[in-house]
Image (cartoon, rainbow, N blue to C red; front, top):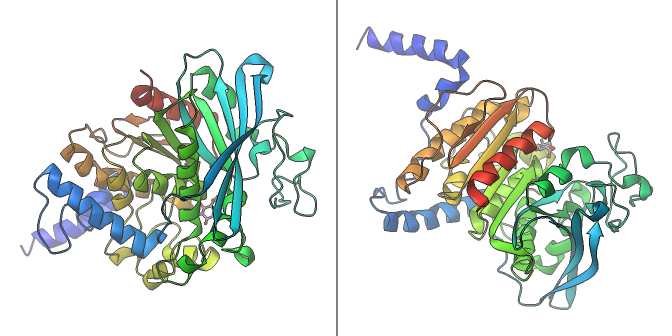
Length: 415
Ligand code: GCU
């Protein structure tokens, strides 16, 4: 033992350079141990443990979301069977939710490939700048919600979208490839659902319908509100005969990737989850203590998560839960974590560690989980029921990401 311990220390120093070996040495909360210390021994046990995990992540991290609204209406206000030069059918749908005399609305933009046999599988995801930003198609309604006139996308005037906002974010949305590969694309704007401005948090969109949910420490956070809206998008898709609601994947980039993961975790109707650089509060494990931490999340974006998360500022490496619990909630459904080498904030090895840690649950439930492999080289995707890649470059959604995401989706969603 006397010789063994220094050897272990040396080994961990050596292996800490090799980020892939790290997750093996992290003492993570065990998805298979019940709160009372008992162990999960069967799939039936897992269903009970899953409820505990859902309860923990809801209470401590994302906050409580409302049930499916009783009064909700879908109005298809636009239908063009000949959109994008005949390649797609475009529908735009307003989701109206009414509760106690108040109303919230947001729009879904739906493109359905014309060449594919219907009903088609779909990919649904929130966008950053408004539906009109994902493609230059002049038929897309300009959002009337607030749009930032940012340095990257200087298109808004007085907080309103202008025609200059059409297609400004198109490089992150591979619309043509998605359609050509037989998927419908469905998107909605984060700001119509719930404001992403600190000063306006909880005062717009769906939050205004549920004021009581804000008066608690496990309050309905903004990431949860976005996830909840994705579920309402799914409610609509279940009514659309052109879409196969059993083959809908939920996608998101960055903060919206956090929402996609939580949507997949809380709503089992999503057949797959596709996360692109979701990072802290998404696919990255906090336990490594690398990249964006809880203190930063709770300081910069105190409204994203439940107030309870604030208890864990500075305690990233000793949490009683971690993000592998979120992926475990998605199991055994396919999940893909796309990362980028220069995106240090979202700590790609931390996302890999999450995938590794959730792998046991995927295997327990009878899937092949994440391929048994060390941390992969750049541009070498790993594909099992859990998929992962790291590409060169920074925080973005690139064509490379979409190609892998679509390859992964083909494996799991195309008949
Ligand atoms: C910030 C934030 C990240 C988030 C990112 C984004 O960088 O710290 O957690 O993922 O914004 O949404 O682009």
